Structure formats: structure tokens, C-alpha cells
Amino acid sequence: MAKRKLTKKQTWRIAKIQEEKAKRAEQKEAEISDQLSAGELGDEIHGQVIAHFGSQVEIEDRERNSYRCFMRANLGPLVTGDMVVFRPGAENDKGIRQGVVETRLDRESELSRPNPYNEIKPVAANIDFIVLVVAPEPHAHANLIDRYLVACENCHIEPIILLNKVDLLDDLSRFHLYPLLERYHNLGYQILQVSAKDPDSLGDLKDFLNDRVSVFVGQSGVGKSSLIDTLLPDVELKVGALSENTRKGKHTTTTARLYHFPAGGDLIDSPGIREFGLWHMSEDEVLYGFRELRDLAGHCRFRDCRHESEPGCALIEAVDNDEVTPERFVSYKRILETLSEL
Ligand code: GDP
Ligand code: ZN
Image 1: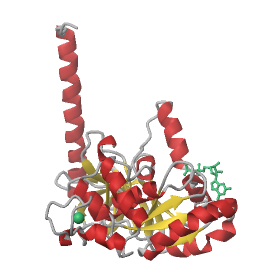
Image 2: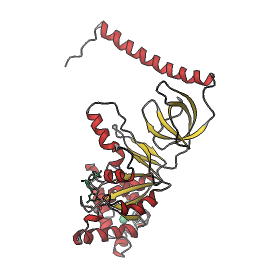
Image 3: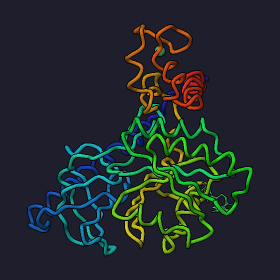
Image 4: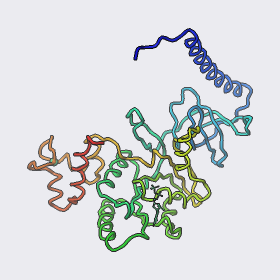
């Protein structure tokens, strides 16, 4: 299509829109400095980012009072879970307390995933545990579990494996699942078993979640929504609601939000976080993601060992000596083979 020349009127309108945008940004800065100079901002206090709305963030103080905060221009990007220092201000005309975020504290951990431009970016911070949900149905493939674990290991956030839908277990699925879970247990991964349909089965999980910040990840259909619904009974669930709203074109945020479990502990959740883990990785990241293999590779006879059939391959020797299970080694090779497909 030929490039269309803009009419004078269109050029004028574009210029006007840009001018208005700049004016609004200026106004916001002016509002902040007005509040500052009028002494309307209180002393600096600690808070946590609960949600992100583009130009503003929702912050909670330690007493769980909520504030809509502007961000200082030199602050750098904030994500849900970030710990900050902020100064509370007056209520806005909707009765919401406002404030200004002054500083971001160092992050203990970052959960990262690719953005639409394929750049790996943090989407949530200060997460203690990734709860990887698996179930008898849909079938828990070892290779898929390993993929998630590789992503967790590369974020340096400890995963735990949560077997949901234990009410559906029968002899056949036990025969498949128990040896599989035992392999992960032997590698040092903690395993819990629950049924989202049976609140009485959730005691150990609640104890585990208490005092920590967790995210739930895993294949579609394993029961993440059901679990979160049961654990957060008073919060109307957002993930389904969010995507519906978005379809209708309503303005909603699809970024992560932090929730407090009534039994203690916090959850950070978003549709993007639930899809965590299934993206392209480098060969080194895949190797690093297998905790029992990562230190072995340096001991191969050849520096450029492909761990295929080379003599003196430390990985193959470890499999032969029963130090590494053949299942995990096969899984490692399979993920390497499929790297280009992701
Ligand atoms: P998600 O895609 O991981 O969020 O999975 P959902 O929470 O949507 O659950 C998928 C299906 O599994 C739904 O039909 C749930 O009712 C069902 N489900 C979830 N948890 C359990 C459970 O513990 N036992 C049984 N029998 N079904 C479950
Ligand atoms: Zn090797």
C-alpha cells in the first residue's frame, strides 16, 4: 500500500495528542512536588508492591493499608512483590490513599519470563517457593516436569512438587506416579499430596505456604485455579475473570497480583506466571537446570563433550554407576533436542 500523506488536520491532531500527553506527565510530577512542598506527604515507610497498573502501583504497608502510589522517575521498573520505601499522601477524590514510591529495596529473588519482544524480564520479586502442580490427569510427563524444574533452577527459586487430585489415584496411576515422585524426592525436591476437592487434605500445604511468598505453576488442567479457589475462599478469582474482561475489551490489569492466604503466607498470581517455564533456554541453562548433572559436566575428559558416546564422559559414567537415573539423563537429552522447537 502506498504511504499515505497525512492531511494538515491529521498532523495537527497528532501533535495535539502528544502535547496533551506531555502535559499530563508534567502535571503528575507537579502534583507530586505540590504534595511534597505542601508537606502533605508523610514520613518514609516500608511497603510492598501488591499490583502494578502501568503508571501507578498499589502498595501495602505492614498493617496492610493500601495506597495508590506514583513512582519517582529515577526508580527503575517495579514488579509485584518488590519491597519499597514510600511516603504516604492524601486521599484522592475517590477516597483512595495516595503516595509516592521513593526507593526499591534489593530483591531476594526474581521470577523472570520472556516479554512479547522475547526479552527475559522479571515479572515478580521476592518469591520464596514455586509450587509446581502435577496430577494423575492430565498425565504427568516426566519430561514436562523436568522442563519446569529447569526454569525454576535457573531463577534460583526452590520448587516444590504438589501432586493434586489424589482422589483420582488408582493402581495404574500410582504405579506410574510414585516411582516418578520418588526420583524427585531423592534429588531433594519436596513433595506434597493434596486434593483441591477435599479441604481436609490441605493441612500440610497450608503449613508449607505460611510465612512465605509462593507462586503456583503447572500444566493447564492440573487444578491450579481449584487449589487457589479453595485456599483463597474470599477472593473472587481473577484469572478467569481477567481473561473474560480482557475479551470484552474492559481495561484490566493482567500483571501479577499479591494475595494473602487466610491461613498465612502470600500468593503472587497472574495468567502469565501460571504459564511459567515453557520457553526457550540455552544449552547451558538446561544443564544447570538438572541439579545432579550441573557439576558433573566439568569432569568429562573432553572439554567440548556432547555427553553422547564420548569416552570419559562423566555424565554417562554417572548413569552407568547409578548416580544419575537414566530417566533424568534421557529427559536432559530430550530437552536439548527440542530446544529449537520452543
Ligand atoms: P488449572 O487449569 O490448572 O487451573 O486447573 P483447574 O483448577 O481449572 O482444574 C481442571 C479440572 O480439574 C477441573 O474440572 C477441576 O474441577 C478438576 N480438579 C481440580 N482439582 C481436583 C481434585 O483435587 N480432584 C478432582 N477429582 N478434580 C480436580
Ligand atoms: Zn560428557
